[in-house]
Image 1 (cartoon, rainbow, N blue to C red):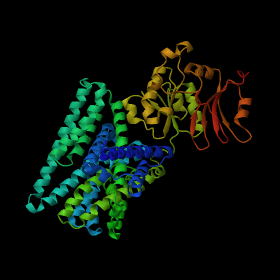
Image 2 (image 1 turned 45 degrees about the vertical axis):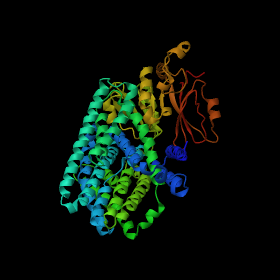
Image 3 (image 1 turned 135 degrees about the horizontal axis):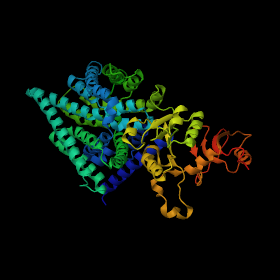
Image 4 (image 1 turned 90 degrees about the vertical axis):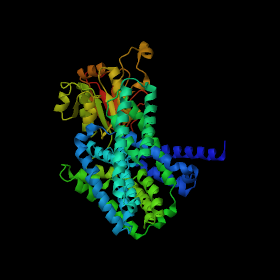
Length: 604
């Protein structure tokens, strides 16, 4: 193996390890992943010199980043569901039209009169700052757990504005490039028409044809995910051949088309694409931040600092507040949208592509274009990534906590359980397809969802931003397992629970549902749905035990009946733990134990 191959292998290993490591740390300590990814890249690159993407990848750097962004936009497009437009549609349209125009205009004026850039460079910078990258906003939304409408607005805006901003920058560059020949306007209009025609033809047309091939089983299941990935890359490459940067728009449309065709295996394909996207987003931020030259930022002066402040604190807020007038959005949503606009990898890539070309043509200030955009990306990633959770909770647009429990299956027992959880200030939601079964919960003031939890209607209407656990309590074991399997990617495999299954001990091994396809079995093996309802009929009660220095878990075991069933533990820090045979509860001081205990007449 050559030295180059060894260095490249080490480079890939370091990027992958740092990326996933940063993602894990962000999850473990509930920090914005983008911040940790950026710091990891800076540490591995400029600070420690472990990797140098510019040298190790050479001419492959920009094409590789372009392909990675194309796949990320394709995956993002698949998650753009048309039903979200019922609420977010007018806002998305305004932000993608009036919002883009206002941002472009104000950004260009600020860049020229405050940043002292020539008009061509100022107008190009105004186009680039339109881009609010999905590579940044999607990880932020995943952690912030916003309500449906503001989350949809930010997600749609980020994914749609990415190709729009890139294409706008291309058209601006072409206009000034061909200005002396007198064909500038014609060149821009023909370029725009070509880009739209090619993107629609390849993205919408190709997505429709591929989706039809999937639905007719012309592609086997094991080839569907690879075929989608290859199609996204092919679509990106062909579109870029026809018009520079049209590939981003084409891949976005490809993902949107396939994501809304209601393909039978779409959820599985979405999950696969999400896994790939997380790996790519992590890699991109490590690569780009590691490739930063610290000297590049020394070119900026006080004018540049004021310009960046205006873009963040004035241009974006004014653009959002003006473009959303008359839409019926409340002030909280408008304030959040006005603040959150992180820029990402596409903005840096576009600036890097055109900065050198404009410098060669002698446009004044072109050498500041890349440092300004890099600084803008770093500032918005830090500012917006560190404040989106706090601000959204303060505005009431996100869950104050994520320890709520979604109970699937309404019954006398599960409704009483929900009442106890509500008294413990734990968010709870009961879902059932029977209006009658939900009647007691509705009368008790418990949040309910009437309908099939696995339906598209539930996907549209359910807001689970404050839910962190699922407990399936229906009488159908297979259905409980299916529900847990469906929601495991959203809640986490160890956060979805189901009641013990109704299987005789001697037949358990050969007839039980496969372990990987069910939720965690809670409570005790005998606590089936029928047994819990029987105990409820015999007047068993829920009991909350608060442990102190004087009243310990040992005291509880001595006092309480041997038949008492521990259910869950609320830690003093708000953490929730469910009791199971594999993970028995061990209460400590200041913890609250919820258990199910027999009535006085049944106690021995």
